[in-house]
Length: 217
Ligand SMILES: N[C@@H](CCC(=O)N[C@@H](CS)C(=O)NCC(=O)O)C(=O)O
Image (cartoon, rainbow, N blue to C red; front, side, top):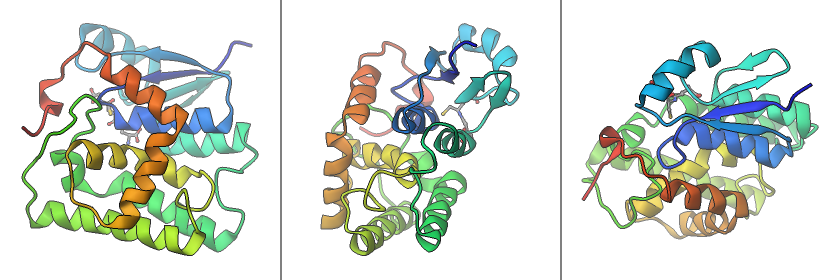
């Protein structure tokens, strides 16, 4: 049997790809990556045979196709990590999953107006009430988790909740968002992580520009 293959988009821009990849890395999976840059002819030609939604990330493992970041994270945790990437306590596990789901389906202002862009350091985007509400909600979730579980990650040790929020930390850093102290503490943990560092460095080195994801000045 070949290794599982994780198809990702640009490291620089694709926050969902980062989530799928980080879950695989932290689960200890031995996998190959196939990078298809977004908005290219190569992506358009190859993705229909790889992903039923035409989107990335998609994981292909021994005939199984898992086509969504949240499902990839849960699958990686079960298949390679023995479940250790979610809290052992069922109440904490439910909270972690609620936070993951909230990220996956919510924070629409933040996602639209602050696209993940590893290269775009020291930019700013206008922050109106709707965007500030998303920022405040994320900060409140992070502060509560760090307080309740003691840090340095959201639920103590690294978990799938962190998988979902790492790209938000990259956005907050790069768009120079004003943040309370617990958010700064969490982001220091995120940016010290070797897997996150490696993704961001490789993302910054990519040559492709996707104009739609170039926000801020
Ligand atoms: N809900 C999906 C979202 C995936 C998604 O939107 N991926 C974007 C890249 S970050 C994509 O593949 N865009 C290509 C396109 O829509 O053509 C997930 O969580 O995996």
